[in-house]
Length: 126
Image: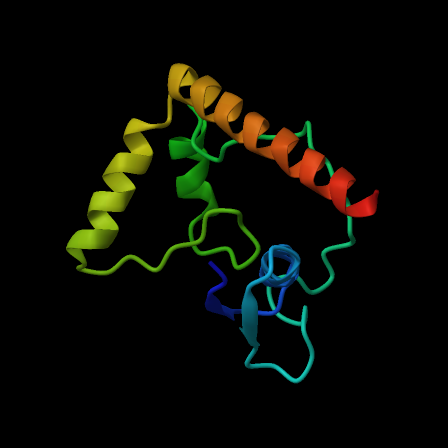
């Protein structure tokens, strides 16, 4: 059954999702707030496809490093701390995941997803 689907965001993920859904026969409407697609999060991505390089952010050395990163605009972990239950809950869950065992498990999951992504990309390119 063909569906009408709205996708929010015209970056790499939004466009790829729209393309796959159109190929499957669905009607797709893509919403992008900027004048050109790919001009927000996907801007200056460089187009590098590194399927086997996966590294979950949560790792055993990150809590201490995270304190050093705080307040730096270009850090991979930049947060504005608030009195928000959701934010503090997320932070606690993140800290619990900062261990070698969880990092390996998450890395394995991300690698499987990445390799699936590579298969899809290869099917698109023929």
